[in-house]
Image: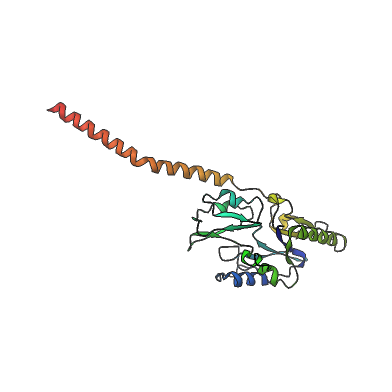
Length: 256
């Protein structure tokens, strides 16, 4: 049975223990940042930051959401990868660093802005769902360390059921009329499921995420045309040179 991660934003206290645990387990280097007038740090997901707590301030409350890879069933990053470096291993979307050529198509195709190119290594990187842990019966580092239970891990069906139960409680007991489950059906079904207390866009999530392949498709076509021109150019130059030499010989013969 497929696994899933459940993130309940109503339980998140923005302690960022998930960020630290992810860095530690995956041996991700620290990122140098600067004060930008926000409590968020670092500013975005990157090749060296695979989960990040986002802060949103309202007049009477703070909204927190741990942002990370959704591990989509219909993963746009996988569909546009020209080398097959991105694939599903069960429910986990992984990037094979040995096959990635750093084209960046996955970065543009992801509707959640998750993959990022490591400029030093020249490859794209993102959350691995701690596949080395879950294949050995352990939970992802982020879920293991969460002190409030805001991040849970288990069978996807169980996580979805728990999410719906939690939404009912938030609506009936706590007055969150906009509470909902996010990720049950989006992109063919996500393996990072959210319990949201308001509309997705309030938390920086697309209401109806779609494959962002239009730009990538244009680039593929442009790349193919360029590659074709580069491949043909030497032969065209050789043909032109041969014709020029033949014309010069014919001209010399006429003069003689």
